[in-house]
Image (cartoon, rainbow, N blue to C red):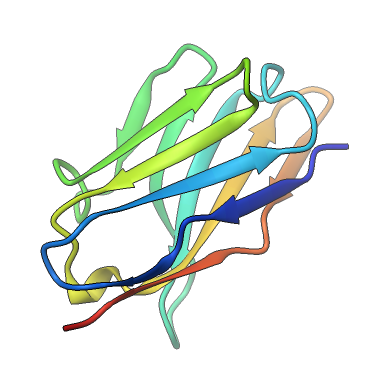
Length: 117
């Protein structure tokens, strides 16, 4: 039932910042975990950050201290604030939602982030 749509990607210089947003067509309240993943060219999709229904967050070591994930259940949105961006952060970023029961795993179509001077 839930559909996800990412926005906010673009071109940014190293050291700059971007804020990605994920808008859900349905309620995210029932989702156990919301997250952001990314996929760089010729590489597998990797986890960037997750946030639980209880607002517990988890970050990959590569982005810890630079990225911040947050959710707004009232607005059915999940955001990813990205600071101190590096060229290696260049990737397509995907929003993800998961729940255990009824089981569900939803993906957005992605938004491209390019870090280049």
